[in-house]
Image (cartoon, rainbow, N blue to C red; front, side, top):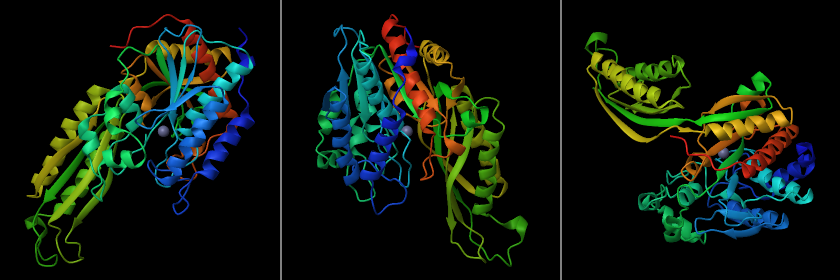
Length: 423
Ligand SMILES: [Zn+2]
């Protein structure tokens, strides 16, 4: 088959992305903000639904608020293919993160229809509810629900006003109880593939048009609390202090070094630090920081967790400062299925696009969908690597190449027999 005939309509993609960004934004917020449960987000769900319907899909909004479209295949009892992403943004976010995967999936369906290309299997397209981190501390609400990874504990979590996630869902017209029980069975998907912007600078730097994602990084998060003693900053000699902030500051560098020295994919960040009492002339008696480490390699993460805990313990005890380390939540790395990686690479080769294997440092809905079947992801370059900011941008010609690879990958997947889930 000549896969070039399936080339997407770049202007149609650009127009969809522009329409969503300009019509459904939280006006009072910076950038292109469209956070989960905001009025702009809720209004935008009808737009996504209508775009799917216009493309000829059978549509519904499921109890978790996922916008779902189905392109029926010839054999409706065969395990379906799934693709999708999300259209919510972070506060002050951009126009491309997630949106490219949803608009790209809809464009894929249009091109299949326009070229009379019929799939054997159903193709399910999903705009997953609330992928980004939210005040309830539950990311990927929609994809967790479909994958059976949303639980009662998630629904009971509250935002800073004490509102439960379950209540926020009810207010948005959703059904949290059904969201818990609608999960698809493990193994029920023939495969899941998601198109996304890279959100980093690697592809732009290498010049590759397509990233074949090898794995989605796992995360270890910690809260470190240092307790020392407040003293006069003029009279207390340096060697007699219990400076909580100095211990914390040295520990920040420990965390940074862990990522810098990683022999495999690994990054480590202290994202926030607080200390008190907060005067020029008082030795700080308390400090705490919030940090995370991410890697596609579970072994490195386990080692990093141990090494960081040990080293910051030494920084604290050297200063006679008490330390409590609380591990907040962890998430294991998720490998993209080898066969899906091969299929994406083959699709890029079919179209003569340069590709490169690349790990994903960011979390994605795809990590959850891997519970239902073989999973893979396609990245397109982000200009200057910018993301989660208003300047986030990708070139429309490169987005179109990504959509073309998505379409071609789905066609290949449709025709290959089931692959065994990764170990
Ligand atoms: Zn995203």
